[in-house]
Amino acid sequence: MRLALRHEEPDRVPVSDFFWQAFVERWRRDLGLVADADIYTYYDLDWVVTTPNMDPLIKQFELLHEDDSEVVVRTGFEAVMRKKFGDPMPESLRWDTDSIEKLEAFDFDDPADGRRFLAAGDNHIAGVGDTFVRNSPAWIETVTELRRDFAVFGSVIEPCECLTRLIGQSNALLWIGLHPGRMGGVIERIGDFYTRLLEAQIEAAGGSLDGMVIWGDVAYRKAMFFSPAYWRRFFKPVLRCMIEICHLHDLPVIYHACGNVNAIIADLVEIKLDCLNPLEAKAGLDAVELRRKYGHRLAFCGNMDVTTWPGAGEDELRALVLSKLNAAKGGGFIFASDHSVPDNVPGSSYDYVIKTLRRHGTYPLDLCEFDLPEVK
Image 1 (cartoon, one colour):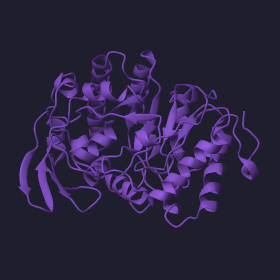
Image 2 (cartoon, one colour; image 1 turned 90 degrees about the horizontal axis):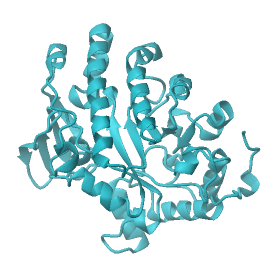
Image 3 (tube, helix red, strand yellow; image 1 turned 90 degrees about the vertical axis):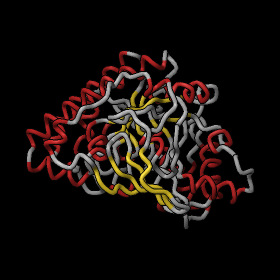
């Protein structure tokens, strides 16, 4: 991982992914594996991401409703979340912080509180997603356990990601439009909170991290959620500071930014981001084209269009894999989906993709008829 992120060629193109739990269950069934087969170990995947408690308020979930089909809780983001067990993702029902005045007055708990890293407890981001988990184990225990087998990255959210959970995306965008200056002040305060949480996380890890993922969805399929100028004024300084802190501790940074972020990729290069993820193909991004444009000033992680995988035969899957591996010449590429692997992907298709990658993704790369000239 570290060689690839330094734009050197390691023994093989690194690979890992984010998997829907329903996909993992299907993969086990499709391949006839035991019920607890671990996909990361099975394929010897190269890295994992861990999630400390990043809730503004450190507290256990407040259980509002529970039956056989769903659960409704209030989390440390003061957000009321419904998780239907039969659906892949949760639903945000409402937010206690429902005005800009309440947002400006919101009192965050200590970002360096040891419970975030050293104690078990409920955790919005780790606990309410495609699964529902109570009392997540202590983050440092997870890091220690996983590091025996994988490169382990920590993670932190930035202000845009926080606002989505704290007040809802519609409110965030509306209030930025109505009150750009006031929201800019809020963004700066949230940025300071998560910057200090990042520093505390690195200290708590005690040298056990191999890198850091910063979560910051700032775009949708067509463009940014707000003007690039607004992002540059209020969001970019926070991201720059986070990257600088990580680099002081020799931690490469992968920035997870969904959607079409073309408008700010040059900015990401400027602030010395190491790697951009997930490069959504459905948003028009192409790692091979981006390599031609930016050379080896930025590494890429993802960009495999999983919407094409469910109906694709082996020849088509092979073409997709080998074509994309042109972005891996000279290092600087991590193989992954262009967001996550959902349960409409057959386990056999994912199995074929990984075996094809292993066969052709060992350096020097053998891309057969899909080989393109290398970009220096």
